[in-house]
Amino acid sequence: MSQPIALAADHGGFALKEQIKQHLDEKGIAYQDFGCHEPVSCDYPDMALPACEAVVKGECRCALLFCGTGVGISIAANKIKGIRACCCSDAFSAEYTRRHNDANALCMGGRVVGSGLAAELVDIFLNTLFEGGRHQRRIDKLTELEKRP
Image 1 (cartoon, rainbow, N blue to C red):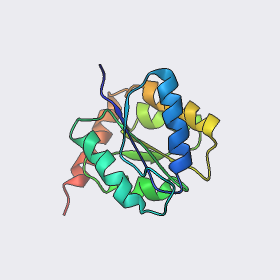
Image 2: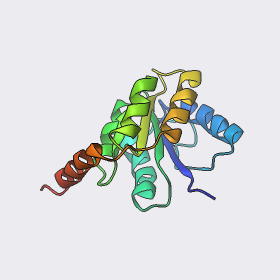
Image 3: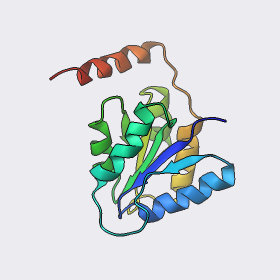
Image 4: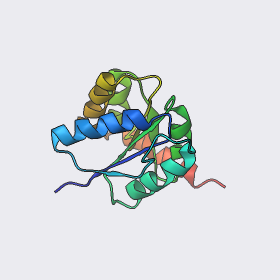
């Protein structure tokens, strides 16, 4: 069995996370839901941390993260060493952030992206492989940036 997908959302992304859970269930894709578990005000950094830590530790394949815009939770995720999070609301970006950036966290806004488009972006993100090659050099440079004080 492949590794589960880490899911997390604040209150602004809660409904979209729940819709994506249904989509993953329909596809037979395993996931671990790190919260929030009800649409009550909470802080996106608190939600991003455990999901992203599971990715960095190798417990989860990647993360799908949700907040109102997708931006706040992507900023929080990118503060975690080893995470390359992207905020996407279009298919091209969702594909190429995997192909060229080897992103391991897809962030979306529950107030920006509808459930149909979100499901499409999730499928693209999960099914697109990193191309490596010349792009690996750039990923290595990103990793070096994480080592700076």
